[in-house]
Image 1 (cartoon, rainbow, N blue to C red):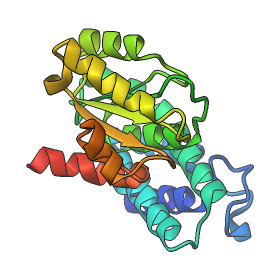
Image 2 (image 1 turned 180 degrees about the vertical axis):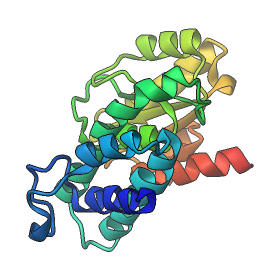
Image 3 (image 1 turned 45 degrees about the horizontal axis):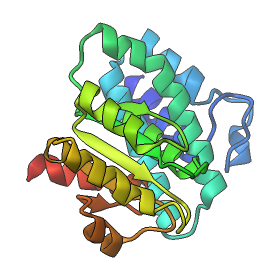
Length: 227
């Protein structure tokens, strides 16, 4: 029963079905329980949040990432799956907090000053939560002084900066310089992402890594942990 539920949650993540009202990629699943209902059923059947996250949510999104990279899936498909995972995490987070489960690390994420694009950032935040990180999403159009203040107060392990435009990506360098001026740069790993940036730009401004998407961000973090 437990294995069946886990597999069903994973499959519904891949299908992008948050609730039974969603059709998904495979229309034959229409009307059957989605990720939310199945996650609730799993908890009733005493399946731990950690197992649900690792074997169903994260495993499902890994398949979605593979389909996205081979262009079998497109952004709307990935968004639907990420939304389903986000809904499941809303159910699981209170239980994780109550049981004092140790997170993999604290991650602050923000779209930099002057940029109001957040789809990519939101997907990254959801994927990181599903992978076991504690995420503080500061939102869009965030000035460097606020980011510096949050880094100083919360002491996160990681900072993610997002920018879609070439006109706003320069703010990433401004943030890193501000962290240096406040003696905080060596206390946090900085990851950057967005359509406008690249590996070369990450090196140019002194970021620790460039991540093309949320799936790569998780791989980068795993590499940091094993380094």
